[in-house]
Image 1 (cartoon, one colour):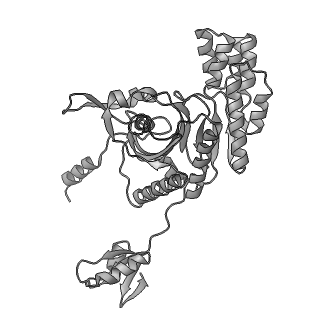
Image 2 (image 1 turned 90 degrees about the vertical axis):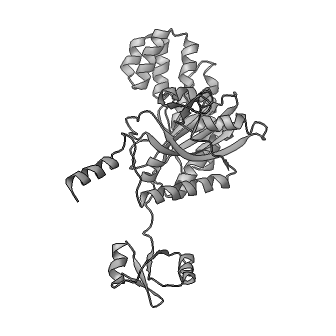
Length: 383
């Protein structure tokens, strides 16, 4: 092959930053992960929906979707002459479906989904701009039991996949704003306090001075394993406006611990980053040995104002958290083998690769095609 031909092939293989081809066996492994997750969700009563990859931007960017406006690719629909957006997240689409197509369906509404999303740019921890999302939404209930159900479903489904060392990091992104309002902080002080809290900067908080510095500092310190962190938070005399947020967090922790005491839970009561549209208890999922989050979720309101909670798992990191697929039993079937015989082998769990012509050295061809076995005289022989 000439140098110019090599260069042409290399040019074809070049993809935009943040995009990649998923090759064997990773592509099949990811597909199996998605299939098993969706099956687990279905067993808990979540019905699958499939929104389009692209839709009119006024629907896509309404309500919670507005937070993703800067991450959304846009293009003009040549048919309607209206602007459309490529989805950057599937959650707003599920809210739209619940409001419109399923607006009269009984509540609480349990929906599941799986698909690809595309974003304008990646993040520090996730460089990919296109990745898979698999998740559920529970719409129409304000009960703490709904929050707990979502957390428990996420951890159960990931455990069933074989993920180990799971940690659920609970947050209440509405708690700090409630404290700010109760303390009557002006905008400048709020910005300084928010920056200090985001960086866990005790000295920065102390510089604010007054009762606000003391209260916010004590709340920030209530970080760590639950339920000990929840008990520490309960010991603080919070303003009345912030009390419902704390009480909901404590209830959710108690429900999770009661149902699944083995689940590792941590609490960070001042965490807000990444939860811009959440309206209550929220969480991030991590797994041992995996860089970055494998999923996140929490409570929010749909564009129609319905209470909802749910989670999204990211397949590009989930695939790193679960064991790889077992080696396939791949069998070379010689040319002329009856179709019924090959079918019986597939029914027994073999992956069959049919030789398309007579072969002089079937063993060598089996190895070349990545087969572990060869069918010879009606018997399966290891190669």
